[in-house]
Length: 218
Image: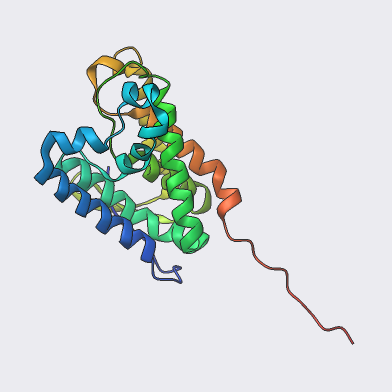
């Protein structure tokens, strides 16, 4: 199943932050293509380098969130961000949504770090932060229709099925790579799982509260 869109009929605000994140990620990817591996190694999150000097290297926790390893990597991440991010931003508000995105990305990076403390392989990508968005979407819009490409047909499916299958796949994949991830690189499945869980639980904090109705009683 490959998601290609969702039902935005209930969205009330223009998702400026989601659009901004999309543009920043694309711009940084362009800079990466120009700068090559030197640029990547300087701004990606490198576990050994961070643990040896966290006070100097802490900015890479943030910069690595906007970097991608390939065209397929950035396309997949930006597709998910574009489909699911706008509705979450609508419920959170612009600033809360941005803060939520960054916190989920930080949690995802640090969770992955626990399993690759001795690695010199750069960690990069927006997947952890976007997984947080998926966790929030799963909680707030479980029955919203997501349009997926399935067996060459576009089929509407409830979000809880699409995202439920996604997180189950990430969990099983993470178990299968725990013993090799420090040396082999590859997909940071632990970051995906941690980001999703963080997003799921942080949603109750970041979602805008409905104000109680006020009355004049005579």
